[in-house]
Amino acid sequence: GFFGDLDYSFSFQDRFMGYKQALIQNQIVSSEEVDSYIEEHSFLHNIEKYMTLMCKRLNDIYYGHAIKQVIDWYIETLGNTTIENNIISMQIALETLSYVVLVEQQKILSDEEFDENLSSTNIRILLNSCKIPIGKEELYLFDEYIQNKFLDGVDLIIYFRNKIVHPSRKRNRATLHVEDMWNIIQIAIRYVELVILHLINYKGEYSNRLKERSYGEVELVPWNFLSNGVD
Image (cartoon, rainbow, N blue to C red; front, side, top):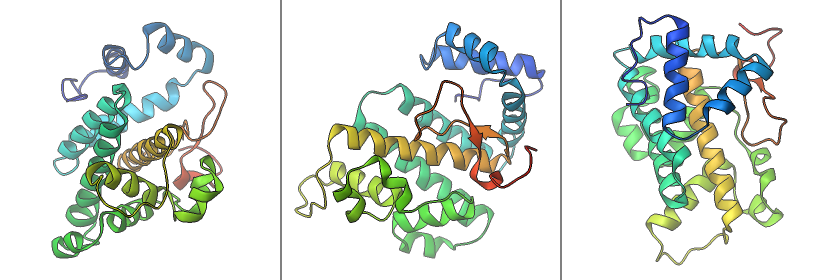
């Protein structure tokens, strides 16, 4: 797995260098980009918090395996240019997280209730339990027609995934162009990123991939947005 080969007893510097190397090996960023980002934006404080919390959670007997699986799918998605595979991987990741959180850990749903629910219902309950806002405001990336046809990002993710898995179905709520597909994947990836950050009890800053920002510009995670400071 992505983090599976790291020795969690390492010092923070060792852990960070392992994280950096993994990013480079997976061709997500170059070594120069990582070094430049660190030098220009001094984000080591947030990285240290993230790595410490992540390594602790990966050793958790309940969450560890699921998080490793999800991170593998996440890394594959970031490096994969096949749009269809990416949306399927991210929906599977969200469904996996939904089950672990809602059924196994928080006991919000029973196995039977989880199985009876639509995937969209379980994912929405997951996002709400993690205090991740969803709604019409997420759809500003799309044209007015799509905004009127869909409830939120979850609705779009499920629709896109179903179009791929069941292409012969006649029901066609909207025509998705390449840019729309790309934006739907970005919404799905952001959900996964935020759920993972919530599960490891991270309360710092992150880069919202749905917003056009200057390189390195960040914001507080939603569940800590109203805080007077960063824990």
